[in-house]
Length: 365
Image (cartoon, rainbow, N blue to C red; front, side, top):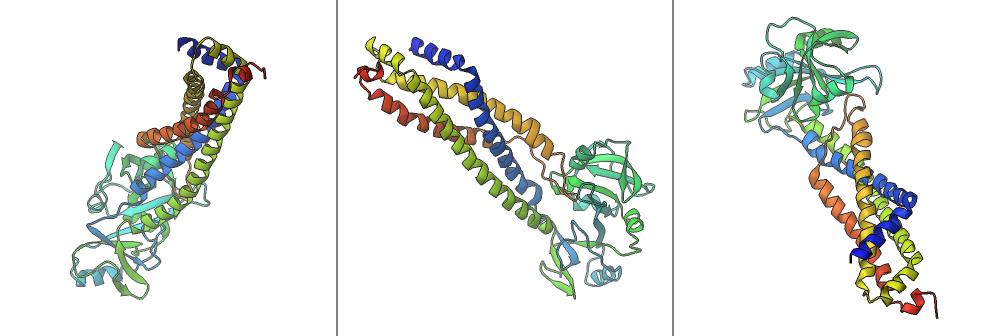
């Protein structure tokens, strides 16, 4: 057995260039598939969180939580009359001049906003009632994209805001910059108008209620879930393409390994004359396939972490991005699947060469 192991390894390393090409071929396909799978796995966590405590009053277009709407301050009095003593006003808007520099802005009531969205301050401080104007806290994803830290300034619609803190929610809101409601109203020239009102669930108003012409009630997080569904459809398609590309690559690798084995058929004939059984042919192919697979897997992880995930995590489109991190469950599942396909690919050639008579392997009729 040791002789076969050494033969398989030495033979493969004698063809180092070919081995590296095979490994790079597999690693590229696998790295892309793994990255896309990680993005898909994080979509539900990022864009699929629905609040069980809060409802959103917004324009019936249904995108008030992200791209904003505009509601009159008169609506607040109507909500109070319906039994909601403290409807929470917010402003949501995409600020920027194009897709590249757009960012999500949230103007919040500094008294009530921590009740509405649970968050953790990673560095610096949160906004507090009585803070001076032109202060902001920003989400971790936005901070990474803009390369901003506490104490720096960030431009919001052309005006500088001092970054007081960096927060994390684990949702799409990590793409947002949060400022006070009054600052947001001044920036957008809204006067007393706002984008949405947030009210607690369980009162007279139910999800789906139409309060007035063009004004409806939805569950907090519903808008993000719609965007998440659209993202997921796109990544599902990319994942399917990457999976088929990976399978095609594995089949190509199996064929190349088979060709390498066939070139060494004379050596197998000699080994068979020395009393080694057919199972050593399978072992030979298994060793070479495993080496190529492991080298390709390492290269695929490098591509995934340094290139695909690394670049995509610092890219946004009009304020929205899809953050990702390594998912070990996806890694092990996909690696086992591709390895199983590779072993299946070498099984048939191994069976074929093991059935050949020794004279045929030695090139004699």
